[in-house]
Length: 527
Image 1 (cartoon, rainbow, N blue to C red):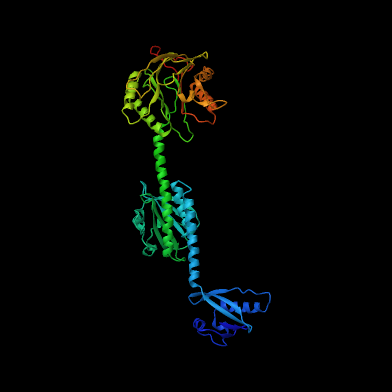
Image 2: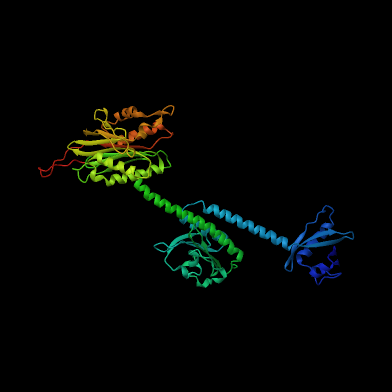
């Protein structure tokens, strides 16, 4: 198409004539072409008069339903030749590419944001907020039903998120029941927005709901919930491609929520099981002080192969049984056997007066199990008589307990025995001990005396160093003795590797005898 500088049409070919039916020789461009093309001609004609303008910028716009790029060129007769190129398909492809890049960027960001947390409520909140930012005016995430109903998270146009539990029939929302069961989604055009119950519409919408998408949140094997997207009447309805994007987003959100829920369930199970494996908090029992301390070999593990328990006698006339043990190995596998040993000893409490029988039955239980690990044990039966605490101490492959006397002397209990879970028969000797007020019997695992540290990091802490350390604990309460031993062992190993460490102190307290109120029956001791 050729026109002079004033905008009069000089010549056009057949294709241009078909594009502009009113155009002809002598026609004014203002009257026969779109405004964007006439304005481009004016700009180019004015630039043509300036020698410094040698490069013409193409113009673009729509002619009917098609998109064109218009390229101007100067002719010898001071005229302008316009070449019009139909670039509709190219522009559609570019728009589709931009849209796909935006979708990919959104899905990537959504995946990163959702996987940043393993908290179920946070994942549901993030899902609703991201949906409002990119897909809809409001969003609702619905979790599978619990005992009190369906946990629901709402996010409105303001971005504010609220959580609640809804007791309602999911079938009241078209497609929601199917989505919660993981069935194929109902197309948006099949859902009547007017049929939504009030609870499914977040507060703060600028107008009535005009379009709804309900999508399942697929999880790992079972649905993680459902996502409801809402748009008001003044916005266009969800297109097919937008529904596809919503489902792709829901798939990522469902995977994140499902992973968070699995983590929460496993954490709850672990906490429950861990509660039974962790050493108990010790306290005074029947006028005798008990204290214990435990340090696993790794900061990442709360349980291991060392353990201790105190089983109080039913009355102060019955002995209290103290158990300190060390299972071969470290970590969770050792902790599993630790739990079995503790449970077995709990069942053997009626036989606690006979240490040899208890150890023999426990040895048989370990030999008959699938475990190939063994254990060492120290048993102590404790009872208070007057101002004295009497103990019967038996070692089964375990370091002999230490006695800290009131004058600072440290003695080793005369007890020895074989490992538990190795030989068909257990052999052991029992030591009978007495503690005066302020004296302590210290039971410990080999993690204390075999702790490597010192100036070069390779020297054992050893029994001699432990005996020298507890000499300073004469007259101390049980808790102070345990704290002192743990502190010295921790300082010795520093930041180096070490085995599990467990310590139990049994102390005869400095308490006076209380006479009976009737003057005849035996009195009690303060605890």
